[in-house]
Image (cartoon, rainbow, N blue to C red; front, side, top):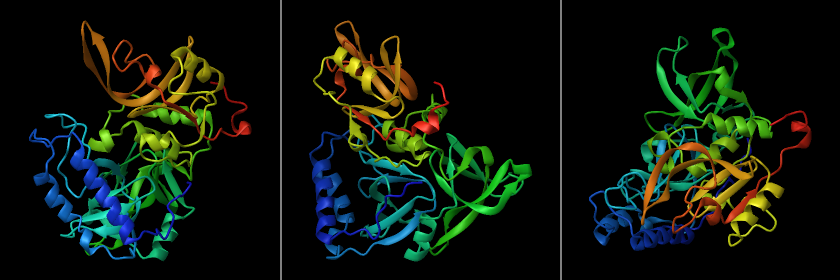
Length: 391
């Protein structure tokens, strides 16, 4: 699996404090609401800003390495309180950066004033996590595990884990794209299961390895070959999977969907849609202001199916190709607007779906096709890897 977490992470105290202040300023000015329906205010922000403990940041930040011992919500601020787009809306939480899987490698740069939160950097995201979920490892041990060649990649939509050889003690699950370490002679139950290890946390917070069992069909040695067929298969394993903003409820949003799919072939995408849209090569001639029919023609003529990411403000999709002249995509989506008389209604989807780019047609904002801003093509699969495949 491609690793892009540079170590050691170089961050001055001034840079970190500036990052924190930028986050505080953004949240303070945003038109978002607390769970009680009140707009975010100084009374909400002041104690959280104090928790960020900016006064204790040293001139040179000394990073600590380790792993997550459980699935956690990575937060924009050190709080579990949410800030939402609308009063009464508890689904789009602006303080939810991402959910992170057990075993995720992380670098700690700072701690909250009460020590209950840690500010971390991972391959995908940075933010605050509960300190109790982090297992610290010395740098040598950390790098040995992080860069180990004995990786098992989860290729199932959801892979169950078991603590015992009879598979009767449930140990949770891992989502697509997660990784474990394979163990020598790890086959059990006639090869139907694999023994593997996953980072855990000792009572004093130190990293340990725990042994788990996982179905052999749910993992692959290393990563899958990067072929169109594998991307199609991995994406469609998540078809109809529930939507979860920022990974809330153990699910996935539009950008995390892409992260999970492409991680199975060793491609680590950024966590948010705006940065994902900057990955790869822009489709020649494609502009956000182009006529919708011109956009369709450009996609049909030059976009690579299952290797082109299509973005509109706040959303990103994977291009599948065309059907009857219509561009088709697979994406994890919450909802879209459609006209209803003189008004517009919100049509809830809350799933990973295959669709055209027609949703939103006739509304003030326009259809997905009209709103497309970017067509970003990732690295093309090797021709020899796919020359005998048909789609």
